[in-house]
Length: 198
Image (cartoon, rainbow, N blue to C red):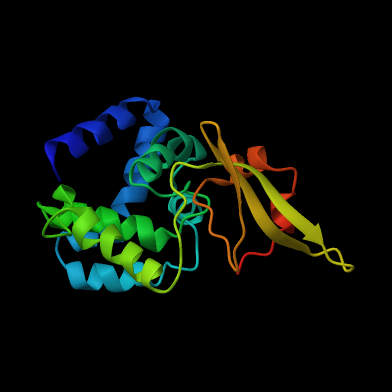
């Protein structure tokens, strides 16, 4: 684990009261991450079986506390670019932790041999554009335009967007909006749970 990751982890651990630190230690001692130090392949097999439960459910079943999740593990999950521990699988979190524990270079995140724009997002964007898709970057979505079918189902018909003084309505066969659920709720009056996501 890199010194920066280790320092961040230790700082989060300092925020916990002694009781929560002790329960945290017990939960981690019972985790496959400890086995990964001796038997990485066996630990990953155990971790794969945890895909059906959330990290919170797994952690609490091993003796961890809710305060540890709120003050330590949720910030760790968010920092890794994930969602909170109640909604992420135990497999995802424990896979990352076991890699950090066993591979000293894992925290460098050298997944690509060069710029992400060239080797990751660039090819994805080119593929989508080659298929006729379009990107509307830096355009703020001001309103989701929609109709309701007779049975009450919501059908999105367009996105009212703007950038500086420019305004336009984006109409498409399918819509992908990259923002969090609270952001979507601020954008429109449509109840998010009423939108069918394909």
